[in-house]
Length: 295
Length: 228
Image (cartoon, rainbow over the protein chains, first blue to last red):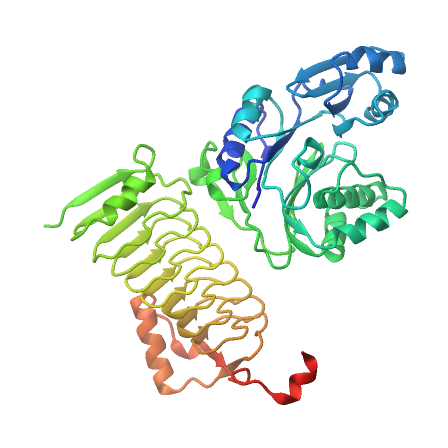
């Protein structure tokens, strides 16, 4: 199964409630799988201070801030959120990322990019969202995933979201059948992987398309043409939020939209607690149709 | 006068509600409030009672229904009225995939649209959809009537055994062994009857096309042996 959720806020008045609303959505999906849980939050001023380069890194020593600062030659702020360190500095996210990977070549990079924080861990969303204090997070959009593991180990590296390109993030419900073939092709083209997970292949495929100049919609179309398997995908970056389902569309998805927000969940019950949902336009995305919103 | 019982799913656990609805000699009318997308609401009923669900529901609502008249004032998730035996299930909004799956009898009305695989493996139920249905609807359908007042998605009636499908709108494509058939007098009569039961008695039956089984997959053809 797996559960995925996403919330894109249109009115700034709701930004202070992003974490609270996302927590409710994610916990409701906990019984679609609770092997691991992850979120990406865009726009929390503490987790990803505005105007700074940001990197989220899992399971590194607590002196990560000073260690990376020494490598970088400039000040690095580190906020520890459960097992993830959220680093920020007055350099680009890519420069900060290079410094982190120079100091910790084996570390799991949960995500990198301006205004984005990614948290992931093994366990039920109720436990982890509590440990993260997610309910207090602010921001303009966020995505979340609760996993029933099928394709790879239950480890932080096997945990969604896969945020492998700058400010990008992908969550997936389903399984890709031909991921091993595509991983081989991407590896041959120089792409590096953190896990044996099928979704990571999809995320790195998308990142490569975007890096090559395609927009999100074109990248997702290419994914639909290349990948075999079952999927509902939610792909976000700093400003956009897109949903697509495979041609068979057996993995569920519900989208709800109001003037204040757009939300997506594996099931309606994930959306049932959102403010004003009674008057929302609610529909199921059609197979292989790409739905995208930009702020 | 029949009694009216109200359950609020914010305060009463679903299992208690369903247990109450399974009581012997059940009678009266029931309202279930605040379902908030819960699964398995009002499943397994077997009594001539009226149940109204006020809001959107999750998976398998009214599954295995016998005799009861269940109305959902909202949208329904996957598999609404799956394996229904008799009675009526009425969805005022839209239904997700596999609506009426394997249902053997009764009437399922979806006033809005139904998603993919509506009536998959249906075995005798009547299904009336006010709007469109998604792809692979009536897949492996065996008996009953599926009436679609709007359009049908790809591969309608794929691998159909029997079942009469009536479509007013456009069919994106027909599945294997499903073909358009002549509307004879008995089909106009049958369609009129089913539409009336679903409250759509104003429809002109001559604006519908009938689809059904070409029956060419019933028996194995030795000419095809080399394909296996």
